Image (tube, rainbow, N blue to C red):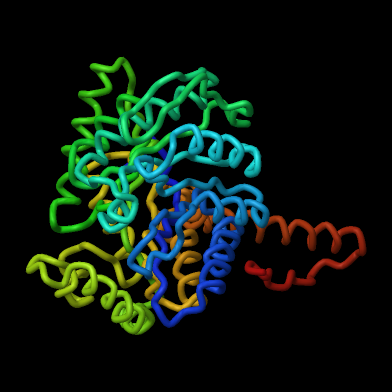
Length: 397
């Protein structure tokens, strides 16, 4: 398959940190991971927002981004996501605008309804209203970020009077992205606000993978109604990928971390028959929900995603902290060294040049040999030597 949109690579950190980890060091490691991603050419890095459950221990993607931006140069950062129903839209817009300056225009504003019902419960909110609130919140925040003054009231949420951002974003074309999983809501809102889509359940077998194509179609149809256009470059597909030189090695590297992560999933949903809490690593791999294997396995997974959304713009590695930092970095590096070039055809011309050199090597060697002979013949003529034979030529360096 030849792409018309080059695939980018990003990292999505909810994050997940087991209960036996030092929280201070877990935050620090997540920042260092962004620094490493920047060094090896990742295009994007996303931090999540969660407030309960203990494992997903980062309540503020903005704070993580502000810290990581100081240690990086090129990589773009995304809020993955700001759960808008939990925030006053003016306060959210002001934080985003300021953060864009702190990153020197490298910020992407990701918004969602909030994933954990327990988060909404703590705030006294009805999580069933969150999707509608996301639409309303996006409407207000995007207007504020454009420089509009807003007077508007939402009973029980906000009451704005001449609300405005006194400092607008550094990047006036800041990209906005909307979380999308199973329901059509994300695609519809992405079309409405000219936003990208964060497809956070891209390879799940409980409907996430199948929803990719349907939600992409819904987004395209909605874009026509709203007078916008959906760009596949703005579609991010998140999936779990850990690779090593062999499948056995990759499995060995994630086995212990998977079992720790599973404790969190069991704590959240073990009572449900269809919960992933009941699945083994091998079963998840068999279902194509995750990749724990080699670069070839990762390439195959990307091709599956392309069947749903051709030319989707960014592969987001959904990190669940299954491996140690050294093995995780090695996996990330292998994605950049071997997987991305294969998908984008980065070595297409190099391969052609390699094959061309082989096909023509005999004539090139003939030229080298005849040129060498001419040089020795000339030397013999000029020095009066006639029968001296030219030594063999070293063809390879």
